[in-house]
Length: 321
Image 1 (cartoon, rainbow, N blue to C red):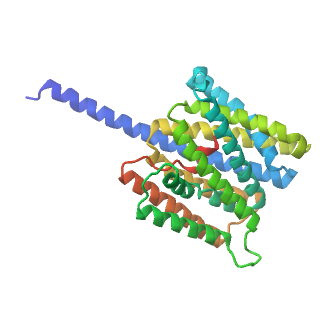
Image 2 (cartoon, rainbow, N blue to C red):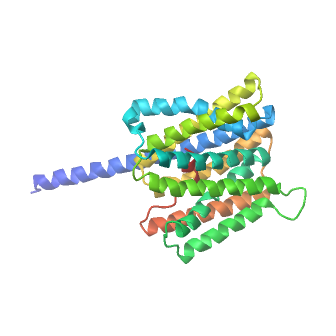
Image 3 (cartoon, rainbow, N blue to C red):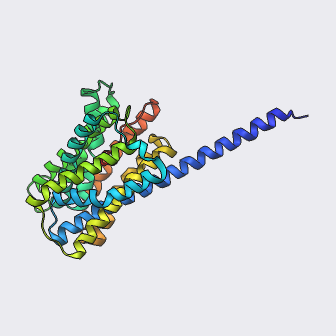
């Protein structure tokens, strides 16, 4: 005869397992949505630059201006305004300065490079984060991760297509893209420390506020009048950016970082497709090969960290908010 207690335990265990699977599936779906929104943001801003001559400081301002209401709505209905109270205001200022410099370089690389190449080079941020975590945080980095770092930079060389041919990418765009990735990695290190005392809603919200203020300060020097179509593209980019931050954050609440972070690389696929559809920019074979190498190095690093049961490096997307 079966004991009643055992039946209840088995049933509870089955329900817990089903709930975990449901949460993981939701986390993956949210992360895929986040990747699509980030791809959409980059494509719309790139299109605005190609169509209306929008420059990086304008992208900074309009992205934050149109994304801030989305973030505020998210805070209002899910986080509560108490989550916006900063515990260390000076740390938010430092994080915002670093993040704004990084995102300005990111937007400038979008202007100078094809969409797919700019997005691919941006994904060297986890590689730089590995190096900085060793230099600044003193985290041990084994030979497997150093190998992944070397392979990732090999991917950059492939994407860059050096050699002076007409197919080679402009060196200024590549350099700015790498500086942006380094800045994103630096923000990642900052977020690891800031996250110990600050709510994620406060980190995202105050960065958007800082971006609006800095962008508004730069507009008199760099801004131009734009037609309605260009403004709509900028608005769409800002809203997509806000939604990307929300879905990315929500994915982390539903599933572990090691499970959802590999789906960030769908941004590269999205950038290639949207660059082709919106800008008639067909990715070259070297872009495809280099993207595969960089994504492979990042995925291998995340897998190694998962095996070591440590938190994997924060993906590049997280540093933008």
